[in-house]
Length: 160
Image (cartoon, rainbow, N blue to C red; front, side, top):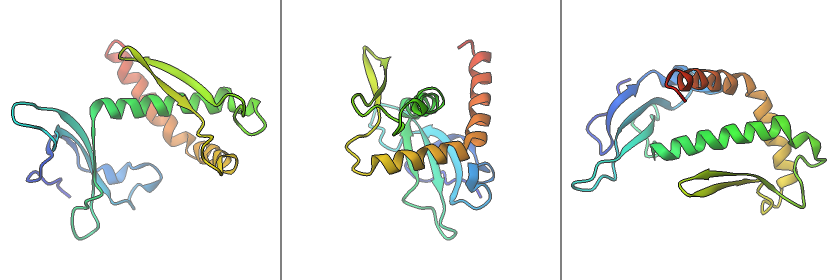
C-alpha cells in the first residue's frame, strides 16, 4: 500500500512495508508505513522534518496516524533505552520494582538542561502497572533487543 503524498505531511523517505515488521503486530497491524518528510505544521519560510507512522483502517488512511519531530523520536529512543537499562540493572533490587522514597531513575543532560526520567508514582495503580510493564518489556525483549542492536551498529558506523 502506497503512503499518500497529497496530504499535509510530505513524505521524502519511506518504508511502505512497515506492517511486515511492526513488532508483535507484524502482518496484522494498521500501521502500514513510516516516513520521514516535511512536517505538516510547517509555516511559510520554515521547514521542519518529521517522522510519521501511517495507519490505515482497511478502508481509508486513519486520523490516528502520528507525526513527530525527529528530536522527539530520538528522545523516545533515549527514554526506551534508559528504561530498559533500569529494568535490567536496578528495578529488581526493589520489592516494588522502584524506590518508594526516590522514584528518580535518571537525569540525562540535553540542550543545557536535563530530561528527568522517573517512575510515575502519581499513578494510583503503579505497583500493579509497573509489574505488568516489566512483564511486557520482558516478553518483547527479543523484538526490542534486535532493534537496539541494529541501531547500535548504525550509530557506530556513523561514528557515534
